[in-house]
Length: 261
Length: 315
Image (cartoon, rainbow over all chains, first blue to last red; front, side, top):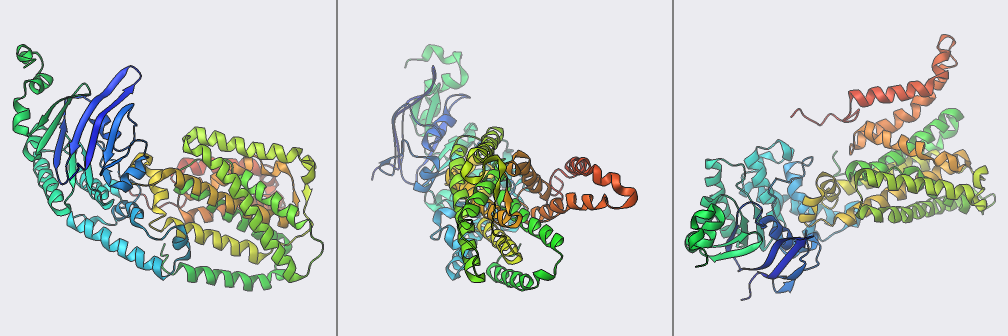
């Protein structure tokens, strides 16, 4: 079976700066891949390329066998790529329930006319959406907060809600942008469990951008390492950990002598 | 707001308007006129609330949309002579609808720049649009130019004003409270996140403008056939500001608050004017616009989240 996501020499330049250079990246179905690298390595830029926020200067990006270069972000989401944000971006004035419900318009059969006419079909559909939203919220123990404004949740719950909201889009590929940022050790353990659970329960692929090496090493099957926009390693965590280029990128000069091997 | 039985509420409101309308000739003409102004203000404020309040696009061109609708409807009805009751109302509805459609087209044209602009920049574009409409009307002799256009028929009545106000409230509440309509608020809250969650932000922003403008156009038609005289200067920048103030005062995206604010702000200048007749309070009448402005400043300072917004908790 073909790869779910395939980046083919994807490159993006901002003026003279090449933020991501000829990135080749494959993600298989139900695979959990980590994208790591030092600060400013181009991880988030790579994310923005995949989700259509930026368009590649050259190279190709294919999802589910079809090119998504030039597609608008909302169309890419509809195709099956959902994401979370490094700095949580919920809809602050909507409550927890509505934050998730807003995403369900992707699965609506009725349109604006249904909403205005409010016939039987409309109420049936709204009811089924409400059930599905609650089902999702309950899976992640957020059901009890359904009427709370999203901004009043604790930091960890907000992170979780953002993941639930992304899952409501029924993605085939979930992109998590530094989900462990700002979490303490206990919360990180919880998050590790959560990511594993999502993958098993929803049978989706996950691409994880993360700074926390411990977390990434523990849960990812494969790691791709970026440095200055260039992929310097790609393989199982154990292998990547020993890769001299990776060590050089993270720790600098000490391994300079070994570089080139 | 419980919208489960929204359609029943709408029908009830329409029936009530019809009944009151039958007895409207017993209401003193001055007050009836004030009531019409209130109803028209409600339509304008609620429709602007969709654009500014729910979708978070700062529009300063609502009077422009109103002018497009008003002039369109007036030009159509002026083609007709005296008509019997049924024919008059039939023509009136068609004219109002045409005015709404013309304004909606204008809304589409203004909505397109919103794809690229936000905040202050969008406000400037919509402000420019309103001014363009005013200047164009001033120079088109077919509609009277700066001298104004007299409207032959005073067909606006209680039923049309408040019936259409009820329809406006229903449409916008139904829209925003549906799963489809949560997208408007999502766009306001965080455009980037909305786009990433599969929401076509462009479509939502343009729809907000089109729907908002449509109802502003209808309000314009009602206004035209209530005052029976239109001048371009009546649809200036200050008029747009008044509607924005209604939305802000009522609380952005707060339907009930905006309706109450529309009522208050329409009555306030009239109320202050009436005080000028009272012996020792004559000075209030003379300085009513100053008092009006001061009141607005005080309200904005003390309740910036909107006069009728109680939802916000301390955080």
